[in-house]
Amino acid sequence: MPEHTLKFNLTLALPRQTIFDFFADAANLGAITPPELDFAILSSLPITMGPGAIISYRLKLFGFPFNWKSKITAWAPPDYFIDEQVEGPYRQWIHRHTFSDGPNNSTVIDDEVRFRLPIAPLGEAAYPMVRKQLERIFLYRQETIKSLLLKSKLP
Image 1 (tube, one colour):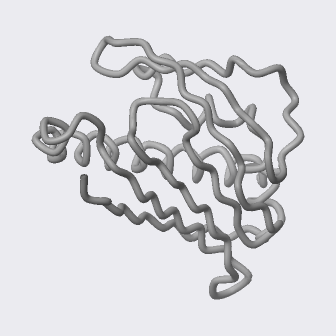
Image 2 (cartoon, one colour; image 1 turned 180 degrees about the vertical axis):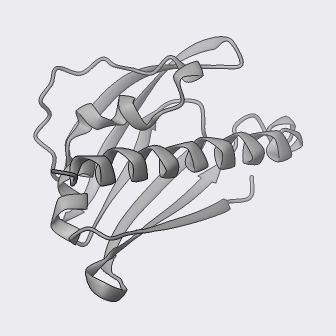
């Protein structure tokens, strides 16, 4: 099965550490996930984030519930972290979150997801639909992150 890559970026007028701290709190995952995915963290909170941390959660996609387990495989605050699917719907899922300084004291948030679909060769037939769904989820995440973080900086 071929590996696919999706990339998204967002620039926010906030310090890098503030944004990294938001992402480092696993409890924020539910707030940035589209409601129709019925996202729920199964792990006990708070989760101490760092290499080897495991996060278990439940989602619903196209009406079908499934469990997903991610492991933090790299952790370099406030620059980046990587989570990888240990258990879930993909043959491979590697999500790199990178935070870098942008213009005028802003922070650039880059998401790169490398994934492989399951069930060869049928999985590849679903790629256009999966890509469209992932793009929609990440656009929702970006808008929600922007709204939550910029609202929190208001007096």
